[in-house]
Amino acid sequence: MKEPNVCVKLEGYLKPDTYEFYKNESPEQVLDKLVSAMESSITSQMRSRAAQLGYSMHEILTLASIVEKEGQTADQRKNVASVLHNRLKTGMQLQCDATTNYVEYVIGTEIYDKNDQQQYKYYDLYRRYYSTKRCDGLPAGPICNPSMQSINAALYPADTNYLYFAIVDGKALYAEDYATHQANCDELGIQY
Image (tube, rainbow, N blue to C red; front, side):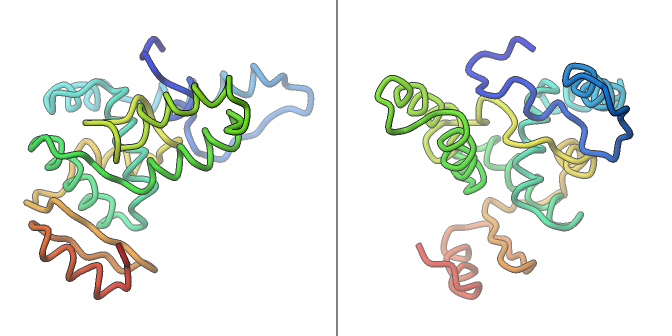
């Protein structure tokens, strides 16, 4: 993969599934199996659909990874995907908590030491590439390895005019405008 600014090169490219491995398989063999499984799951129809939407498969996997982290059910994933597509079409920032959490809890704690000045500059750079509260459009790459359900939701989102969503304890509310979104957040007990 040659996508610029991607922090974890295989993020999004390892298919979540149940696998059998031999006791003495090398890490490389394990990774090859997971990457091959994802590659064989991405069909030419999926690639065509991505192109029809105006996205590369890397961008669809990135979008699907956000859908995976934000939505919990099939319906939620399709609606969240709709919100994300609608926001991208209108030029709005995605502003997803899942991307900020990825920066703080994966990049920030597992990859770079924020207390090390030299490493902090890289952490800060990736914060600009991944936090959708800072960057415009999609982050540089996936924030997890999405399920096929989330990939399909990214390719075939619900047909809505939603621009906002809020999900708490399995309950999801959607809105076309900010005032309704604020009311939804109040109903769900989300404080800004």
